[in-house]
Length: 335
Length: 224
Image 1 (cartoon, rainbow over the protein chains, first blue to last red):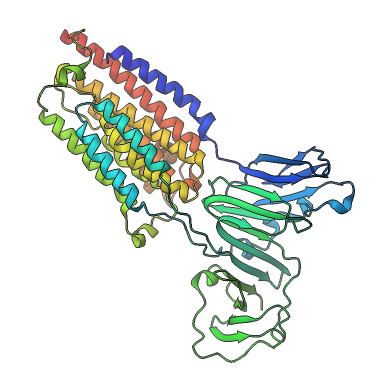
Image 2 (image 1 turned 90 degrees about the horizontal axis):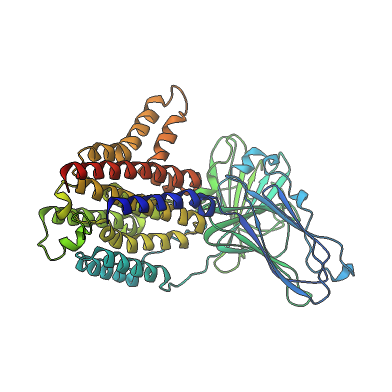
């Protein structure tokens, strides 16, 4: 290749470079994916990242439409989400319903200690290459080195192997759901934090805040009505990423030193203002909180104690009766 | 066929030179270094957290592909970056697959892949043109572009720490160099994708154009 042709190649690559930021360089938006939206519906308002997207759609009874709406996420913060369906006719047939987006409120309005609490440890998916891909890699290296006298053919061969490595099948394992009830007695606020990997089924379309880790993951929301007259289902999908959803619980847990109207706890720990942490063992619903340390109670997991304020009493607990593989925790500041 | 054209056609059939073995060794070294982040045992890989394996895997390739070659004249110089690319693409594809399965968005991965591949191609081409023209200026130019700017950025960053707060100059200097930009992409949550892709590639385009112009003048002067 002559220098002139080389200069042309460089100019072409430079032009591609100038175009590239437009096509690939911008952060991916959260995409709201409404699956199987069935009428009657006369309007829809979606809220994410401080932006509201109003959809003027009119679906007759039985009419089904599939929508994908990209919405920019809030950089470095939890993205508030909400879905509200406008008046339908007849109202009774509105099976998809959500609270108004503004009810999710501003994340920064929450007590600072609640904003900064540690997220539940959802298992990361850092897949191993696997023997198939490693074998492909070794084969590619041997073949490319064998073609070193023909570098362009070697590049072509490497590209072909790269495509095969990308497309080779791999098993996908399911991730359990982690749930944490976060409370702040002083502020009187509660948050239900749900975490999972790949997808998080919320069960009801409700306003809240979402976060994905890593934050550059491509997330979308599926909002679908249930079978027949069943409840609507809102699912946050972010393939491979850890997904977290924070919302205010419909019913605030009723807990105190002398009463427990919330749930059976498999084990609880209390950290007094002095900083001493004691494992108190099981705490049954309806009973007062145990006061004496239980032998062999063990320690709570480290993530549950991270970033909690000092000098105030704290209750930590793991609920009994969680579904197979799932875990339900409670963390109350100001117990 | 002009005397300067299609050096690889002349190269075919001739015994590989010492420089050929040297660059092959360089590429095998880059391959070995690039596969390390993928083959790390689970416990060691935990320390990398959510770091982009794709960016980590590209770093040795971008660092080594433009390594200044000894001038052997137009006839004995071969364009070697396609071979390096052939070795790099399967490894980087595997890293991209791991990142995609770990939740990194497609846009971020494409930006990293395209930016790094462009940087590698441009550096490889600049190396080839400089070797053909016997350009001595390429070595310091390569050093400044690839290693010097990130090193300078790191020095400034250390120098001002605790005294002047965060200096805007250091991140900017790091982001205009391909290695600095790749290092930013290792942490996907903090990376300005557009800057990471745009600045180093533009800088490299300037470098390669300057190198090729100088190489052509050098060859004309040598009567090739």
